[in-house]
Length: 386
Image (cartoon, rainbow, N blue to C red; front, side, top):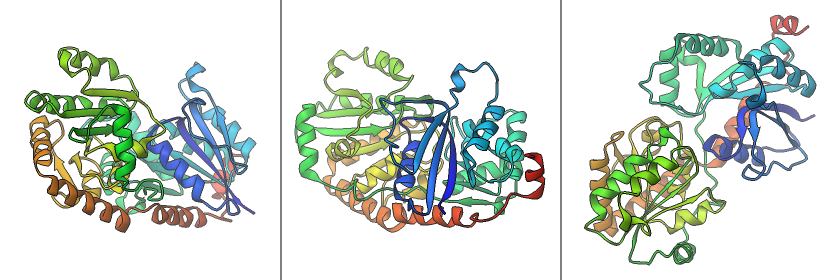
């Protein structure tokens, strides 16, 4: 009998964590695992991923329409209706799934941290810290997608570091791979010539992604280098702020592109000369892995899990959070030295193939879920759910 897993997430839409969930579900053997995705807030049918699989169902609690501060009761009802073997809750926005699963009883509990919404130096309210620690204690398995997140949350909560595992995200190298010819076709569509230097970013337009640093670095160099172009793929609340910044530079109208979200990320990456990730905080960024798998030189902030992915000076370049001057220097270097770009791209691809394959990620999840197969909930949990 297949192991039934209920994945509790904030929403079903576009994002790194959702992308990782898609990759995982698509590759876990449907004879061994079936899935129910429970979105706390909303499902985006026009932009969400295709979960139309006979072994995958999607449900939504629609928290945005609910007047209560929590959804624990609704989650308990959903868990008792679905009767999963495992409830896997992801990130703070889905953490209530741990307590709901504990109250419902008769299921095993997994909780995982996939990233941060704010700077890693930000101080969390004590109530959030306490609830996070309680959830760690109630869960059967706790893990993070990077060692940096593991260290951070162990320090914040006082929870034993040895009890927190790490499963790195993986990238699908069958979808993301170098293809210069395909990239050339996309450049033609975008009106970008072969002689143009195309800098690219991929990610939701939210404050934590700090796209303003890229625009500031671009401003520092673009005035003297008319063939520099910038494309920022994504959608989010920061777009008006970024567009307002660009409004001061009327001659940039054709040089900076905001195409919104795209279903052609692999093709867009192949069109770029350099990928930039300026985030204030990260877990293990899926778009970074995808860019490296495409053979791109990457320039990323030395924060979160980024240094676990990028070996500085070998498979990419690291710069300090918010340091637009250093980013501009790196971009100028890569503009001038094609041989450096090519070598960083080769090493990036090698790094992905050796350490961040999707097959390795899926095997670790199989082992994680498999270790809970057939195990009954702890007696106190079963009693709580009675």
